[in-house]
Length: 508
Image (cartoon, rainbow, N blue to C red):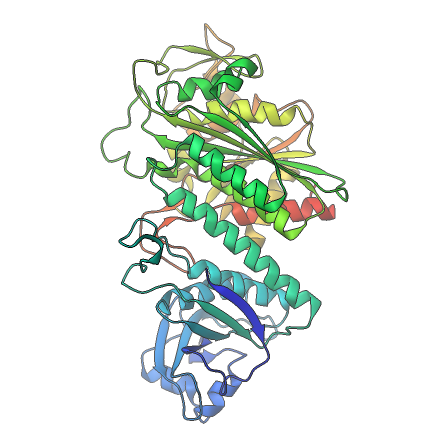
């Protein structure tokens, strides 16, 4: 696990494997970003010229390595692109710093220690750089030869130690920013681990056991409903989805409570540990990454633990709806009718629209506690990927102001999101002649139809938002910024920020 610290040491005398500096894209060429003055001085004020000679422009994600100047104990200077130089006195955007730090951390895989001299104008900047570095240093090597001792892709272990220079180690705000960055990044990386774990090792029972261990470690209350308890409670949606698998479903409730809380935020995550599509089997080429269909539950799990680690003054309850969607003689068939936990009946027209079924039960369970707000997270529809691409998640809600607040929270922490509507005319497409509602409606606008279905299972008067993270939850392309290939931990930072805003009374 990568360590993160603040230091007042000077760059020349610091023993490290590399010094990281920022370079921006100016109107006349690369510009050395603030924070790297000592390094620039050691190059006789010509670091920008040297970088330009080496082909650097300052573009976002660009990495340039050069030998450290005479007198430095570190042998290497790594210049990382920050993108366009901000206007005078504007400062660098937190997300630009986060991404640059992530790129630098990835580029320094195999190094033991690196000192970061990126621009830090305040504690928030220190938090962004620290978070980006910890997220960029992530690797998943559990299943490689020698297990946890194996090295990451390319044969290099992750950067072990990140030191932020230019901050204020004794300043309360800076210390808090580093503690927050560490907690959020470590829990987000835990979510990535869960998403990357193959489904033969992460079935519903195994996921539930991991949640129980985390609850014990962080003082959380945990309740696990197994298949018998689910049947006794009438959770027809979760049971119906899991009925075709040899691995029985689970509903996990994780609770972080504090006597200082004035509000209660409920988080609900879709946890399909593997999605074959069930009887409505997915076609070839669509099954290979379906271990990621529990990304919503992983995000909720990580967010609740992060809230506990940060000691937020808000009660946060996480509901993990866990099932494996498999075809077999006992599987739910297209045409079957399920009686949900709410009492409503659902005609299953497509067993590959299973996420909304497990979420419906969990949403109704969450509603019974009458929280101030419910936010669900799910890799729910391919339609949302078609609408927003692979890096942006959709936000739907039963309250426009709350939808806006969730969208703004996502933007604030650097997660790409976009508000989506819930058009009333699409609801009619889910009318069923034999049940209260069908789990499918019109094909066009399928992501919105799914949102309308979920809305049916929200208790009266409860504010709710739905995050469809089908696009950004799993990165099948190459790494970028602080985002690795594979599980990304999408929505974790947004959920944590929503918890913080709820605690401060600034959300809704």
